[in-house]
Length: 327
Image (cartoon, rainbow, N blue to C red; front, side, top):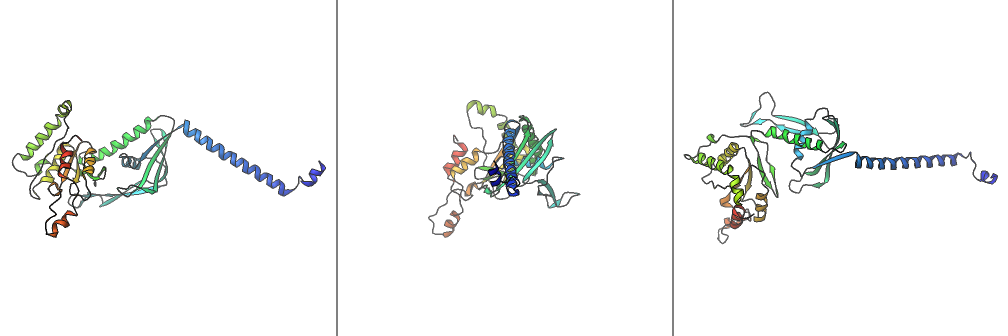
């Protein structure tokens, strides 16, 4: 024993300090391990999460809903610029031409929703982008204490209703982006059918026919007939074709989905995919249908070949298949 004391003196400060550091390091590691295990157990048994990605149509609804929540605690904000220019380039009375709304930016936010504290995590992936729009991939994760998922359903319904209130009484325009339809601009005020001047009884007959078709949905289902209705509007530019479609959409409380058949790169397959994923209660407006199909390239006039470079690859048979085929 005396020899051991001589080899390792108990009052050696270096040795005592080393033991202290080892004890602290071991204690810190044990605490970190216990914290990680406890956090995993808490998430597994006591926390419930909901993930909303930017690919889902409810994502903008959720962001709008977050921006109007009162009492939300956050230090991470983003700005959303709002145009207040009314039709005719007139500003909204009593307000400037633009406004700004602060929305929850990437980071963590805490809010109290109907007596429940919810942690909101908004994440933006800079390395992942949407190939159609080029925007970064984003997601919002809601985390609440408990196993009740109905609170998330209430949030989603509130977000939808809030957006629906803003769009009530307006017409929404959609454009096609690959395999999906995206809203183009802000919802627009409806236009009266009476404001469009057409030949005698043309507008009234079309409106009556569409209403009859809408009321005959069950008749189509009982017979297994595709439930669709098509019209070919023809006339020189400025004769009111597009204006009437816009007014008809307002009359029926429908939206408008615009698809240019002369768009470069449009194929029969892409056209079929686009028309199979049209938003409900929508009128599909196929523009430039007379200029969509290949022209005669055998002409010596170079103008035909130059125009052909800007045409789509939609064929006449492909158009007929998507309009009246089994797909």
